Each structure stands twice: as structure tokens, then as C-alpha cells.
Image (cartoon, rainbow, N blue to C red; front, side, top):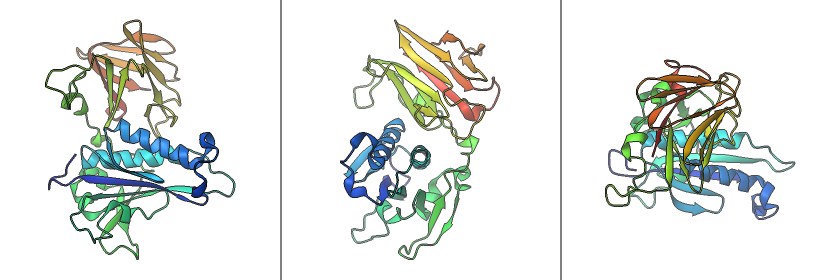
Length: 295
């Protein structure tokens, strides 16, 4: 979770706006609480670690600077789909910056960069460390209260396909706990899904995962209109991992031996390792590819 200099990359996500003092009222429909819940789910999905619980947000660290930025983009995507309430406009502000050694550097912190409503602000230090393709999303930003070079990241733009990262499958083998002795298995994990920098696990406690454009899904595909809002579902059922397609364009599953199966409005068992493509067939656009591994 460190950058090249050994310092953690911190993501500060804070919900701001009118009426935040009533967060405990009407808990289920509270717009502040709903945004905080989505932010926390993204942190978990991207293997982040919450280092500070804030009254209206979180400060979290991630395994790499690219992961931190992709998680920040998804936080904004997921929260942007939530409705506003009458006379109660709320926004999500995100700042990304390496952990600072200077206790008096107000600007040298992710909290100091979280100044843009529904926006992501990164420092120049972060910009220089991220994937060059991700830098195309950033543009210089002027803020009177900040005296270091900063940049706004346009999370509404499509994430470059070259950013897709598959090492989540290989960094920790399915079933292994990185905090446990090597080879010790977490027997309750049945399936690992990896999409770009995001990971979803199927376990006895969470035996179902949904994929699609709808922000409520476990894996969300923003602005990809070949993918249906609720495209497919993967579940553990009686000792089998079953993928069920509910989409318009179908789902393609290619196993580790190169065998491809295209399904539409039907189900298929999946096992071993492979690639799931939504709305197209292999060798289609790998940017939408979901890598899977069963255990």
C-alpha cells in the first residue's frame, strides 16, 4: 500500500452539503448515509484499508496509487446516481495525496485537497506516480487555499483500457489469507472475480455477485452500453459456481484452455481460471473482461 518513496497514498472522501447535521434521522433514506455506505463498499471492493473514520467520510489507503485513483472514480460514479432530496443538496469531495511527514502542512494532506464538489483532486506528487494513461484524465486546477500544484481528475471520462490490471489474481492466490502463514486456506472462498483493480469474492456469507451497469451491482461497468444494467449473476449453488446471463447481448466465458462459450438468457457452470466478457465475444474488448478463479 506504499508508493515508490515508501509513503502511503491516502484517499480522503468526505460528504458535504446542506443538512449534514441530520445524518441520524431517517437512516434508511438519508442521502448522507447512503453515500457513505457506497464509499465504504468501494473501499472494500478495491482492497482498501480505512485508516480513519470521519464524521461524514473516510480516509483510506490502497495497494497502489492506480488502485487509489480508480477507487476514487468509482466512488464518484456510485454516488452520482443517488438522487438529491428537496432543499438538501449533498456532494462527495475526494482528495488524493501521499501521507505527509509535516504536521503543519495543511495543504500537504488529502483532506486539504478535498475541495471540489463531486470532484477528485490529486497533488502533483500523485499525478507523477500514476499510470501515464490515467494522467489523461487530469487537468490543472487553481484553488486559492492550496499553494501546491494540484489537478482535477475527470471521473466521468472513460477509463483507458490499457489500465486494466490482472495482478489481483496472482498477488494472493484464491483461498490464501495474506495475514496467515503461507499456504493456509480460507476455506469459505469459492470464487474470485477481478475487474481492472477491483476484486469481488464469493463466500459462504456472500454467495452471489451481480454484474452490470446499474450502480447497485457488485461489479459496475460505467458507460458501456453493450453491457445491460443487470447483465449477469454468479452464485454458489450446491457445490457449483453458476453464471446466469440476463442480458440483451449475452455473456462470453473463455476458460484457461481457450475454450469459449457464449450464453444468452441461460446458465453455465464455471470452474478453474478464465475470462468473462459482457456483451461481446473473445477476442473482443478486453477492457470489459472479468478474470475469474474458482477455489
